[in-house]
Length: 267
Ligand code: ADP
Ligand code: MG
Image (cartoon, rainbow, N blue to C red; front, side, top):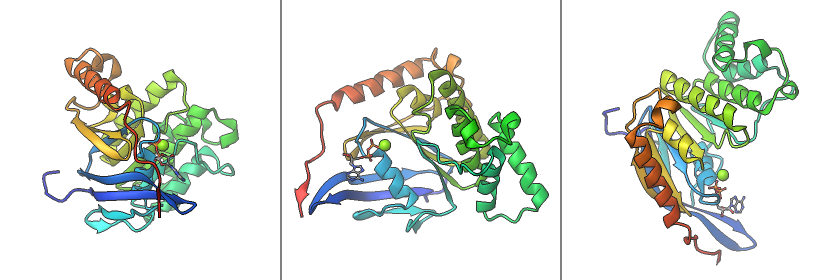
Protein backbone atom coordinates (compact mmCIF):
# COMPACT_ATOMS: atom_id res chain seq x y z
CA UNK A 1 0.00 0.00 0.00
CA UNK A 2 1.35 3.40 -0.90
CA UNK A 3 -1.06 5.59 1.05
CA UNK A 4 0.15 7.09 4.31
CA UNK A 5 -2.60 5.57 6.46
CA UNK A 6 -1.45 2.29 8.06
CA UNK A 7 -3.90 -0.61 8.26
CA UNK A 8 -3.08 -1.05 11.93
CA UNK A 9 -1.38 1.53 14.13
CA UNK A 10 -0.11 0.74 17.60
CA UNK A 11 0.90 3.98 19.27
CA UNK A 12 2.75 4.16 22.59
CA UNK A 13 0.82 1.24 24.00
CA UNK A 14 1.42 0.15 27.58
CA UNK A 15 -0.38 -2.65 29.38
CA UNK A 16 -0.17 -4.05 32.93
CA UNK A 17 -1.56 -7.20 34.47
CA UNK A 18 -2.92 -6.30 37.87
CA UNK A 19 -3.09 -8.70 40.76
CA UNK A 20 -3.14 -8.24 44.53
CA UNK A 21 -2.85 -4.48 44.21
CA UNK A 22 0.32 -4.73 42.17
CA UNK A 23 0.74 -3.87 38.53
CA UNK A 24 2.97 -6.12 36.45
CA UNK A 25 3.97 -4.30 33.29
CA UNK A 26 3.66 -6.56 30.25
CA UNK A 27 4.08 -3.91 27.53
CA UNK A 28 5.73 -0.52 27.79
CA UNK A 29 5.42 2.13 25.09
CA UNK A 30 5.06 -0.21 22.15
CA UNK A 31 4.59 1.45 18.75
CA UNK A 32 4.23 -0.25 15.39
CA UNK A 33 2.55 0.58 12.11
CA UNK A 34 1.37 -2.24 9.87
CA UNK A 35 0.57 -1.73 6.20
CA UNK A 36 -2.38 -3.30 4.40
CA UNK A 37 -1.48 -6.76 3.13
CA UNK A 38 1.66 -6.92 5.24
CA UNK A 39 2.65 -10.17 6.97
CA UNK A 40 4.20 -9.35 10.34
CA UNK A 41 5.87 -11.98 12.51
CA UNK A 42 6.19 -11.13 16.19
CA UNK A 43 9.21 -13.01 17.41
CA UNK A 44 10.53 -13.19 20.93
CA UNK A 45 11.30 -15.33 23.94
CA UNK A 46 8.57 -16.63 26.18
CA UNK A 47 7.03 -13.95 28.40
CA UNK A 48 7.99 -10.99 26.17
CA UNK A 49 4.40 -9.90 25.73
CA UNK A 50 3.64 -11.32 22.29
CA UNK A 51 0.29 -12.85 23.27
CA UNK A 52 -0.59 -9.74 25.24
CA UNK A 53 -0.01 -7.56 22.19
CA UNK A 54 -2.14 -9.91 20.08
CA UNK A 55 -5.01 -9.81 22.58
CA UNK A 56 -4.87 -6.01 22.52
CA UNK A 57 -5.05 -6.12 18.72
CA UNK A 58 -8.00 -8.47 19.02
CA UNK A 59 -9.63 -6.12 21.50
CA UNK A 60 -10.00 -8.74 24.24
CA UNK A 61 -7.99 -6.40 26.46
CA UNK A 62 -7.51 -2.66 26.32
CA UNK A 63 -4.23 -0.72 26.67
CA UNK A 64 -3.56 1.11 29.94
CA UNK A 65 -2.24 3.96 27.83
CA UNK A 66 -1.67 4.58 24.17
CA UNK A 67 -3.92 3.62 21.30
CA UNK A 68 -4.49 0.92 18.72
CA UNK A 69 -6.33 1.76 15.52
CA UNK A 70 -7.58 -0.36 12.64
CA UNK A 71 -8.33 1.56 9.44
CA UNK A 72 -7.84 4.73 11.48
CA UNK A 73 -10.52 3.83 14.07
CA UNK A 74 -9.74 2.83 17.67
CA UNK A 75 -10.05 -0.89 18.46
CA UNK A 76 -12.68 -1.17 21.17
CA UNK A 77 -13.34 -4.91 21.24
CA UNK A 78 -13.24 -8.05 19.11
CA UNK A 79 -14.86 -7.79 15.68
CA UNK A 80 -15.40 -9.78 12.51
CA UNK A 81 -12.77 -7.62 10.81
CA UNK A 82 -10.16 -9.65 12.75
CA UNK A 83 -9.98 -13.45 12.71
CA UNK A 84 -7.94 -15.19 15.38
CA UNK A 85 -6.18 -18.55 15.50
CA UNK A 86 -4.94 -19.53 18.94
CA UNK A 87 -2.21 -21.98 19.84
CA UNK A 88 -4.80 -24.39 21.18
CA UNK A 89 -7.27 -25.43 18.58
CA UNK A 90 -10.53 -23.73 19.30
CA UNK A 91 -12.83 -25.75 17.07
CA UNK A 92 -16.46 -26.43 17.90
CA UNK A 93 -16.47 -30.11 18.85
CA UNK A 94 -20.13 -30.53 17.88
CA UNK A 95 -19.49 -29.40 14.30
CA UNK A 96 -17.77 -31.34 11.53
CA UNK A 97 -14.75 -30.00 9.63
CA UNK A 98 -17.08 -28.52 7.04
CA UNK A 99 -19.44 -27.29 9.76
CA UNK A 100 -16.62 -25.40 11.47
CA UNK A 101 -15.65 -23.74 8.20
CA UNK A 102 -19.30 -22.94 7.41
CA UNK A 103 -19.51 -21.27 10.80
CA UNK A 104 -16.67 -18.96 9.76
CA UNK A 105 -18.48 -18.15 6.51
CA UNK A 106 -21.72 -17.32 8.35
CA UNK A 107 -19.79 -15.12 10.78
CA UNK A 108 -18.39 -13.13 7.86
CA UNK A 109 -21.80 -11.46 7.58
CA UNK A 110 -21.71 -11.68 3.78
CA UNK A 111 -25.02 -12.41 2.10
CA UNK A 112 -24.30 -15.74 0.46
CA UNK A 113 -26.95 -18.17 -0.70
CA UNK A 114 -26.89 -21.62 0.85
CA UNK A 115 -25.28 -22.99 -2.31
CA UNK A 116 -22.59 -20.29 -2.29
CA UNK A 117 -21.81 -21.03 1.36
CA UNK A 118 -21.51 -24.72 0.62
CA UNK A 119 -19.23 -24.07 -2.36
CA UNK A 120 -17.03 -21.70 -0.39
CA UNK A 121 -16.74 -24.15 2.52
CA UNK A 122 -15.82 -26.86 0.06
CA UNK A 123 -13.10 -24.63 -1.41
CA UNK A 124 -11.55 -23.68 1.92
CA UNK A 125 -11.61 -27.29 3.13
CA UNK A 126 -9.95 -28.30 -0.13
CA UNK A 127 -7.30 -25.59 0.19
CA UNK A 128 -6.15 -27.00 3.51
CA UNK A 129 -6.19 -30.53 2.11
CA UNK A 130 -9.05 -31.89 4.17
CA UNK A 131 -11.68 -32.78 1.58
CA UNK A 132 -11.58 -36.46 2.54
CA UNK A 133 -12.14 -35.55 6.20
CA UNK A 134 -14.84 -32.91 5.63
CA UNK A 135 -17.52 -34.83 7.53
CA UNK A 136 -15.39 -35.81 10.48
CA UNK A 137 -15.68 -34.26 13.94
CA UNK A 138 -12.71 -32.65 15.72
CA UNK A 139 -12.36 -35.64 18.07
CA UNK A 140 -11.66 -37.78 14.99
CA UNK A 141 -8.80 -35.57 13.77
CA UNK A 142 -5.08 -35.41 14.50
CA UNK A 143 -3.60 -32.23 15.99
CA UNK A 144 -2.30 -31.06 12.63
CA UNK A 145 -5.65 -31.63 10.96
CA UNK A 146 -7.42 -29.65 13.68
CA UNK A 147 -5.03 -26.78 13.16
CA UNK A 148 -5.71 -26.85 9.43
CA UNK A 149 -9.42 -26.57 10.16
CA UNK A 150 -8.74 -23.61 12.46
CA UNK A 151 -6.76 -21.92 9.64
CA UNK A 152 -9.51 -22.66 7.09
CA UNK A 153 -12.21 -21.33 9.41
CA UNK A 154 -10.22 -18.16 10.08
CA UNK A 155 -9.67 -17.61 6.34
CA UNK A 156 -13.35 -18.33 5.64
CA UNK A 157 -14.26 -15.38 7.85
CA UNK A 158 -12.73 -13.30 5.04
CA UNK A 159 -11.64 -10.71 7.58
CA UNK A 160 -9.19 -8.01 6.61
CA UNK A 161 -6.87 -8.99 9.42
CA UNK A 162 -5.66 -12.36 10.66
CA UNK A 163 -4.14 -12.73 14.11
CA UNK A 164 -2.34 -16.00 14.80
CA UNK A 165 -0.76 -16.89 18.13
CA UNK A 166 1.88 -19.62 17.75
CA UNK A 167 -0.61 -21.63 15.74
CA UNK A 168 1.82 -24.44 14.95
CA UNK A 169 3.55 -24.62 18.32
CA UNK A 170 2.24 -28.07 19.15
CA UNK A 171 2.64 -29.63 15.73
CA UNK A 172 5.32 -32.08 14.63
CA UNK A 173 8.16 -30.65 12.50
CA UNK A 174 7.19 -32.16 9.15
CA UNK A 175 3.58 -31.10 9.29
CA UNK A 176 4.68 -27.75 10.64
CA UNK A 177 6.70 -27.13 7.48
CA UNK A 178 3.69 -28.00 5.36
CA UNK A 179 1.36 -25.74 7.32
CA UNK A 180 3.83 -22.84 7.21
CA UNK A 181 3.98 -23.04 3.43
CA UNK A 182 0.22 -23.36 3.26
CA UNK A 183 -0.38 -20.25 5.37
CA UNK A 184 2.24 -18.33 3.45
CA UNK A 185 0.61 -19.21 0.13
CA UNK A 186 -2.97 -18.62 1.27
CA UNK A 187 -2.26 -15.29 2.94
CA UNK A 188 -0.48 -13.96 -0.13
CA UNK A 189 -3.32 -15.26 -2.34
CA UNK A 190 -6.03 -13.75 -0.13
CA UNK A 191 -4.05 -10.53 0.53
CA UNK A 192 -4.70 -10.50 4.26
CA UNK A 193 -2.96 -8.31 6.76
CA UNK A 194 -1.42 -10.79 9.19
CA UNK A 195 0.13 -10.66 12.64
CA UNK A 196 1.67 -14.05 13.36
CA UNK A 197 3.27 -14.77 16.74
CA UNK A 198 6.08 -17.28 16.87
CA UNK A 199 9.31 -18.06 18.65
CA UNK A 200 10.64 -19.97 15.67
CA UNK A 201 13.25 -18.05 13.66
CA UNK A 202 12.80 -20.11 10.49
CA UNK A 203 9.06 -19.78 10.60
CA UNK A 204 9.42 -16.00 10.84
CA UNK A 205 11.82 -15.80 7.89
CA UNK A 206 9.63 -18.04 5.74
CA UNK A 207 6.45 -16.09 6.39
CA UNK A 208 7.16 -12.47 7.23
CA UNK A 209 7.44 -9.29 5.21
CA UNK A 210 8.75 -7.80 8.42
CA UNK A 211 9.98 -9.51 11.56
CA UNK A 212 9.33 -7.62 14.78
CA UNK A 213 11.72 -8.83 17.46
CA UNK A 214 10.41 -8.30 20.97
CA UNK A 215 12.39 -7.93 24.15
CA UNK A 216 10.48 -8.11 27.44
CA UNK A 217 7.68 -5.55 27.22
CA UNK A 218 8.95 -3.72 24.17
CA UNK A 219 9.91 -3.93 20.53
CA UNK A 220 13.62 -4.46 20.23
CA UNK A 221 13.95 -4.03 16.48
CA UNK A 222 12.26 -4.78 13.20
CA UNK A 223 13.85 -6.55 10.26
CA UNK A 224 12.39 -6.36 6.76
CA UNK A 225 12.45 -9.59 4.76
CA UNK A 226 12.65 -8.73 1.09
CA UNK A 227 12.62 -12.29 -0.25
CA UNK A 228 9.83 -12.70 -2.83
CA UNK A 229 6.66 -14.72 -2.12
CA UNK A 230 5.72 -17.51 -2.33
CA UNK A 231 8.74 -18.82 -0.49
CA UNK A 232 9.82 -22.41 -0.77
CA UNK A 233 11.92 -23.52 2.13
CA UNK A 234 14.45 -25.60 0.19
CA UNK A 235 15.23 -22.63 -2.04
CA UNK A 236 15.07 -20.10 0.77
CA UNK A 237 17.68 -21.73 2.96
CA UNK A 238 20.25 -21.52 0.16
CA UNK A 239 19.95 -17.76 -0.24
CA UNK A 240 22.39 -15.26 1.24
CA UNK A 241 19.56 -13.16 2.64
CA UNK A 242 18.25 -16.12 4.61
CA UNK A 243 21.65 -16.70 6.21
CA UNK A 244 22.07 -13.04 6.98
CA UNK A 245 18.62 -12.75 8.59
CA UNK A 246 19.14 -15.92 10.55
CA UNK A 247 22.42 -14.56 11.93
CA UNK A 248 20.85 -11.22 12.81
CA UNK A 249 17.96 -12.89 14.61
CA UNK A 250 20.23 -15.19 16.59
CA UNK A 251 22.30 -12.18 17.67
CA UNK A 252 19.13 -10.31 18.66
CA UNK A 253 18.28 -13.22 20.94
CA UNK A 254 21.75 -13.53 22.45
CA UNK A 255 21.83 -9.84 23.26
CA UNK A 256 18.66 -9.97 25.30
CA UNK A 257 19.43 -12.97 27.46
CA UNK A 258 20.11 -10.85 30.53
CA UNK A 259 17.27 -8.45 29.98
CA UNK A 260 14.10 -8.65 32.06
CA UNK A 261 11.19 -6.30 32.46
CA UNK A 262 10.68 -4.38 35.73
CA UNK A 263 9.22 -6.34 38.61
CA UNK A 264 5.68 -5.52 39.76
CA UNK A 265 5.12 -2.15 41.32
CA UNK A 266 2.69 -1.41 44.14
CA UNK A 267 -0.37 0.57 43.10
P1 ADP B 1 4.48 -14.26 25.44
O1 ADP B 1 3.24 -14.50 24.65
O2 ADP B 1 5.51 -13.47 24.71
O3 ADP B 1 5.05 -15.52 25.98
P2 ADP B 1 2.66 -13.00 27.32
O4 ADP B 1 2.07 -11.87 26.60
O5 ADP B 1 1.84 -14.21 27.50
O6 ADP B 1 4.09 -13.36 26.70
O7 ADP B 1 3.08 -12.51 28.78
C1 ADP B 1 3.82 -11.33 29.01
C2 ADP B 1 4.02 -11.17 30.51
O8 ADP B 1 2.79 -10.99 31.16
C3 ADP B 1 4.68 -12.37 31.15
O9 ADP B 1 5.55 -11.90 32.17
C4 ADP B 1 3.52 -13.13 31.75
O10 ADP B 1 3.92 -13.85 32.88
C5 ADP B 1 2.57 -12.01 32.11
N1 ADP B 1 1.18 -12.45 32.01
C6 ADP B 1 0.57 -12.97 30.93
N2 ADP B 1 -0.72 -13.23 31.17
C7 ADP B 1 -0.95 -12.85 32.45
C8 ADP B 1 -2.10 -12.84 33.30
N3 ADP B 1 -3.28 -13.27 32.86
N4 ADP B 1 -1.93 -12.37 34.56
C9 ADP B 1 -0.75 -11.92 35.00
N5 ADP B 1 0.37 -11.88 34.25
C10 ADP B 1 0.27 -12.34 32.99
MG1 MG C 1 2.29 -16.31 24.13
